[in-house]
Length: 124
Image (spheres, rainbow, N blue to C red):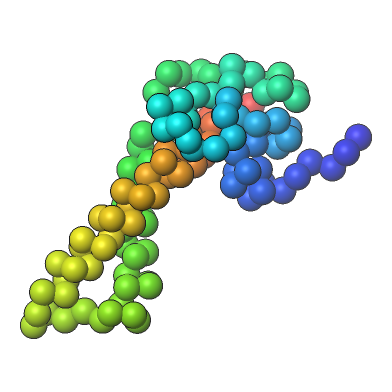
């Protein structure tokens, strides 16, 4: 029997929570956006059921979006700086909002994968 891939590579590779080999999503890329969130009914490799609910992961998506908004300060502050004496806080908020909007397709897919990993861990 082959060794199961690591948990992190399974999550970031959008792989099945059970075997970490089969793909979760029907299409590999995020383009076209219209169908990027379609999940396979079951894992093509181990036949683990992947679709339990039609709307899974919005709470995790909210948490990931909020975390990303706050993590933007790690790159913004050293490059541009911020001060209360000028409008730099508004520039930071605009840049953070733009980053979150551009990252939203990836965050939506990642939140569904994390939801499946958490759900299957509790389901047994």
